[in-house]
Image (cartoon, rainbow, N blue to C red; front, side):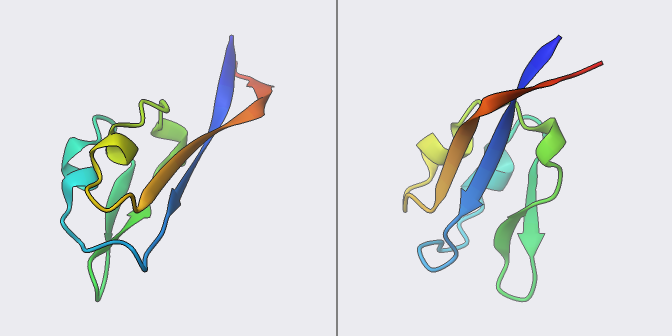
Length: 74
């Protein structure tokens, strides 16, 4: 089975800590970073690349990138 690599980029300067990305993620990829409660990636391996966090962010503070290279998953 093959799986695309996913990269989640969070632009902290644009983030207003609304927590929509954390609440909407079906795989719990994101969590809070203290003290400013900005989101961070805590489990990138769980990310499916659905892009819900990116699409629903009101400040465009998240980008989900699919890498071209594919890795073998066993």
